[in-house]
Length: 295
Image 1 (cartoon, helix red, strand yellow):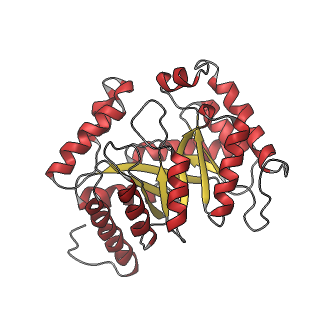
Image 2 (tube, helix red, strand yellow; image 1 turned 180 degrees about the vertical axis):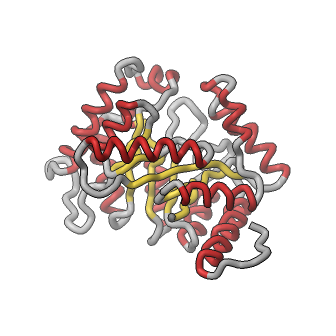
Image 3 (cartoon, helix red, strand yellow; image 1 turned 30 degrees about the vertical axis):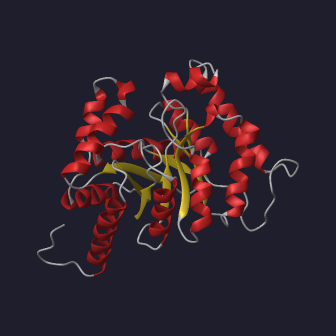
């Protein structure tokens, strides 16, 4: 399983310097991807603009939208933007998409929230057609169109994933929650008659140190306030120690996750350095298991 890291683009106070430094440091290893989240009615950066900035200062890591609420973006423009970013990054873009669940985002965009499921299925088909249309998107031979991941927890979400995407992205939670979702994704894949297996991506949140944990808990409560009391559960699942991160990673790996992106809950480059050290230790243990490891 590969380990990626999220950019702090939805954390208040994040500035240009931190995003550039974060992306540059992540590209030096041991991370395999950079992820971004998508909100409209929030003090946050546009996910595709943020990834374009990261693309300019990175050469190795994949650039992943995990996820974009795609219906908030006009379909043809979204196709053009993602195809351009994919080409200009050298084929490193992964497009994670979902319908989202925040009514205020839909209201601000002037889009019918209740009809989002049907519109999303149509959009997935239209995106692929637009990517292949040389009148709209750059037809760069060595990159092609970006791989698509689809998220969501409904039966329809898994069916859409199996029909239109290369894999499934889970919205977060403990490894057992991911394992159940992965089983449903694989079953939908088989039911759709797709060869091979779907790519399976997951995500979680981390913060280290008392100040960061306090700030991170406030951030998660605020960011997920639309869920009501469930926001407290999300905040309680914040990974706050090397041991917790290691257990989380191992659990996702055992459940068959291909790529796990860990998002910061506090905007401080020291958080990234600490996570990198944990990831390096885990990689070393895979090669030569160490007795008495703190992880």
